[in-house]
Length: 96
Image 1 (spheres, helix red, strand yellow):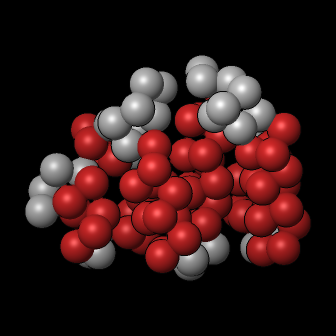
Image 2 (cartoon, rainbow, N blue to C red):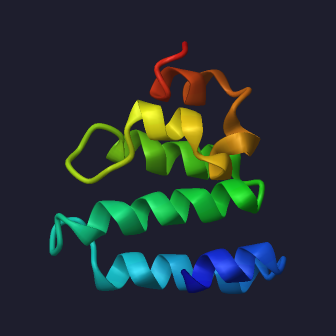
């Protein structure tokens, strides 16, 4: 959540640092419930900061795993608006 707040404030390095740290503390290998949520948050922070390639790379690794984002949530949630025109995102969201 802290990473998302930093991203909204335009604090790019702090947002990236907070998101990466959260992922380090609870990787999917250690926590299969919260790990995918944290990786999805890292993707959302990256999308917000304009790092589309990294955001999509993160999403590709968590879409379809338990507690990861679904194609439906990718289509509905506003944090993915900056990625909507990307063909790779459309494929993940089931529209491509």
